[in-house]
Image (cartoon, rainbow, N blue to C red):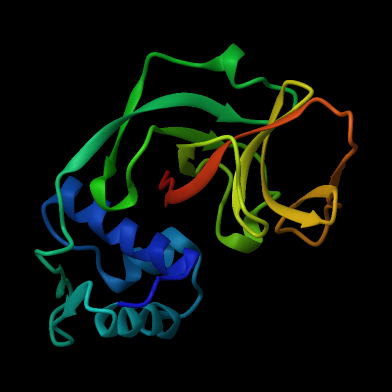
Length: 201
């Protein structure tokens, strides 16, 4: 199986979490609504790719004909809800005792936690206001990975880009500018985003 793209994984994780929560699979219309897709053809393209990757079975004659393959489906896990990623709000200051249930397929080894996203700086990567991101706690990240970072004690979710000795944090929103980290600036990586749970109001 090839690695899924972040958006493919988000669709797959939504199907898994919906199925575990409701006891049946989401319809194509429900998937389209959750991700803001204007066409069911877009949903079908994702489902075809997931089926080819062997993580999903699809009965094209049934409205709720999606089935996560048993070798992929696992029990859900409870992860700590660390708070909200919002400008000017340190993670430590808004940590909560709450937990949130996530599909075990999102979580690998190591320590993981969940944050709720506030704002639209990462909409281009499918991370919307109110969504939950699953984060693997680690102090280092590779260029191109989406990270949760603290800058002067303020939390943000951005794509990490390394340019020689310089570090930039790029939004996935053309209306916003990258954040450039100066050499002596108070900056640290809290973790790498490994999963997304769509908020469905």
